[in-house]
Image 1 (cartoon, one colour):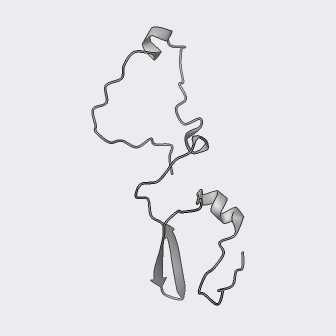
Image 2 (cartoon, rainbow, N blue to C red):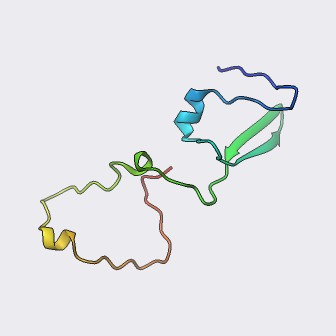
Image 3 (cartoon, helix red, strand yellow):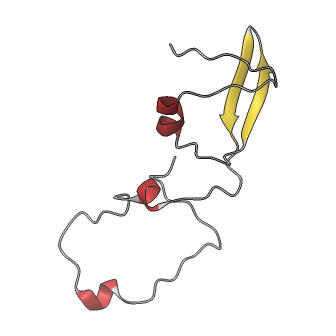
Length: 88
């Protein structure tokens, strides 16, 4: 269990190991929800900015190697917006 204190301005510091685990970077918007016995804090997912380490390794190909012409061919996506299944 990590501990923190409320400052005179009502601010708290979320421990670094928790921020790192949840990938909360400066500017991440959090929802503070009044819950029985305390509060719950959740990240708002709207307009999340990703960095390379967020997606590194999630597009791995399993199987036979693909020829370079197939790898460089244009890709048609059936959806206007999509999410990678490996993202949090």
